[in-house]
Amino acid sequence: MTDGNGSGPAARVFGVDIGGSGIKGAPVDLDRGDLAEERHKVLTPHPATPGAVVAGVVEVAGHFGWAGRPVGVTFPGVVTDGVTRTAANVDKSWIGTDLAGVLGERLGAPVTVLNDADAAGVAEMTFGAGRGRQGTVIVLTLGTGIGSAVFTGGRLVPNTELGHLELDGHEAEKRASTKVREDHDLSWPHWAHRVQKYLAHLEMLFSPELFVIGGGVSRKAHKFLPLIEDIRAEIVPAQLQNNAGIVGAAMAAAAAADGAAAAAP
Image (cartoon, rainbow, N blue to C red; front, top):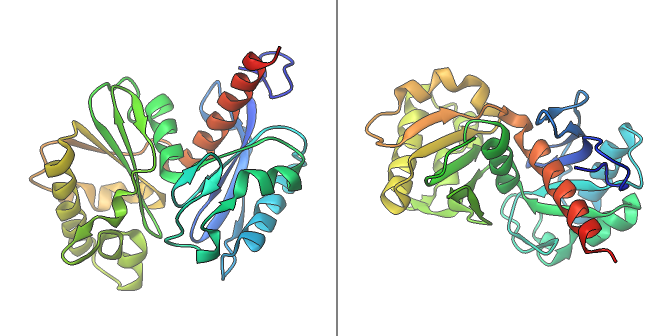
């Protein structure tokens, strides 16, 4: 692992997690799989247009004086080759935006962009609740929407976006996200029942051996996970909790930097 400058085994890489409610980031210690400093967060602007969100990311990076070194960034939607392809919980003008290119110019550094739940999943599979598991594992991030990361044999199937599956005639994230629980003041048992129905649907489709439940609500896992019944798969809270996206983003940036260094003549 290099520090992005090719100067040896430094472990710090910067990660930023763009969410529906906040943009948060920090340097990450990739030897430990944890934040190297307390994260800095700004509110996601509304409307969450590309220009406004990019300004938020720049502000977060600037808080740490991070410039000229690799940065990993998550996005709440499908991402291919650094380009955002969907925009479920942000402004529709994001579709087709070269976020890696735009941010790279603003930060003066190489930027790697990936789906937010994929980032969280990679972190959990490497450092957290999915570590060492080789069967099918589904990591879910319950927040403004529902993000998903699917792994089999330890390998990620990117951009699954399973929060948009239909559940009771609606998109699943319109029934079982944390935002829905808060907006409708649902009791923990009521909401847990909705989450249970969603997990049962995923289990029918994928037969996973493990569900990892992440997002900010994972800090309160004791309030709802014990209420979920009749699911064959093991269900556990994310160990990295709401920092998983930042850690996974930094991991992606480090991997990209190492790949670029290996490819250099």
